[in-house]
Image (cartoon, rainbow, N blue to C red; front, side, top):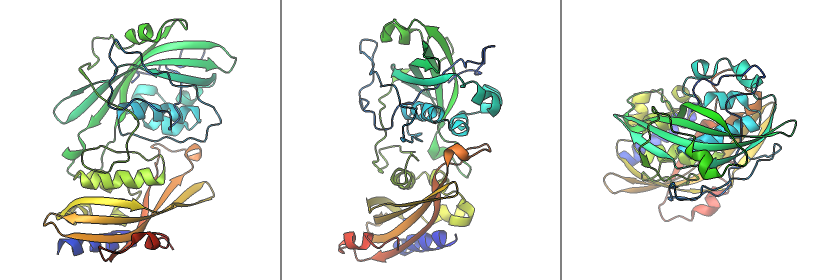
Length: 365
């Protein structure tokens, strides 16, 4: 496990010389906010904030047998999608772990799980997402209409409002880091025949919601540049891209956190951060992902080529392989949930003008 930290750090040195208030359960056991899932590939308008005069997109009801897995904290919309994706897939520990303080907000994990006993599926309609940035803290208000169907076929709709929180990732000076999370929220029943705009108008009218300016959100882009914020662990390419995005953004504590055992993989954080002092911009080309499963675990190998531009305008090219691991989400039982993460890496320098494609084919051998 030490090979990743030593070899990756050596490469870097070479280029230097890289919302729901308490989820109250009524006596019948039905949760105040019902679960829903939005498939990861559902198109949502990007860079087009919804206004009161705009009809929100209606997202289709999910299939309970969907193989789609979404674990994406890149923005408020993808976070809420991921939360409900987890519940609809019955990955309740993962859902529980999206909350900032679930024990206080939701109660015990057992009660949280039982709250969804009678829920079959729910579809989502988003309203205008707004944001309010404070001193190092970012809060978003997310109005959502939940269109639920119970296991007995009963339709019930709710106007829900979530407050999503993110501590500014650039402000962290040392591990650990707290990713984007659900801080609190409310939900109230609405008539199933009500128009979406009317239902959403009822969602976030509480006086304590941090409603401010509309923000543009949509599906997360795999752009790893510093102009994007990517924290997506839905699949191995997204996870590695998020790691590289953190490095490009100089958010080294966040980058460090993508390892499942960072002290073992990367060494002490201070040395890890210092290793990137001369790294300016990283670009990447991926090869074909290799996957395998075994005894409740998923393993992946991701071949990639990185071009690294240093602060002194020098360029070096690296070919290598990241290994990743995810314990089967439905089988994890202890809080907090452990998302997909890096477990090893091997890299070597190659000539800048080399054809990287044949090298990618053997990078993970």
